[in-house]
Image (cartoon, rainbow, N blue to C red; front, side, top):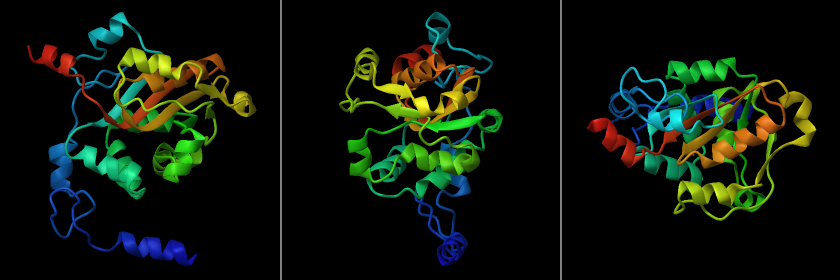
Length: 241
């Protein structure tokens, strides 16, 4: 009870914007939200930016991904790269509240969450979880819709090497056989509309592997919602021409 009262009291205290340092402000002030988290058209299958009016990008038309839809709030770029690093690597899980609020400002993302039967956070390998102390995807999912979170609906069977420097193809090979729908939740997953939650989507290989595992378990639909999407320089260049 005391901890809840303290948390409620802390949310009412004025603070400094983590980006522009304006005072007083929320953790990210309204000016920075408008400047760095404004809406932009994105492919509904891979969440990459695309021209206005385009629903599905050319890459996804030629090479469909196993997700029914995918949504992102921001690009993985300044200033969000530093904020996400603090969230994941510097013991600041409190960023999840701000990220979730920004995600839910997107009507498409909000609809995806509200229409889902369950939210499944992308799992961490046990060694990574022990090292970090928490799964950032789980913390984020609980801020989006706590009553819908299926904590262990998806399992990571083995530790995979870091994927930061790998190509999309290398990531796909790296993840082969690493993810599995939890056998204890098969009756819940079958016929369900599921949404995968993660903080960052880079190539989409992890989300695709997760979606394939859930479809194999009988899920009717598999969607994905992430806070940040890594831009594809090739796609950006084509769109500017």
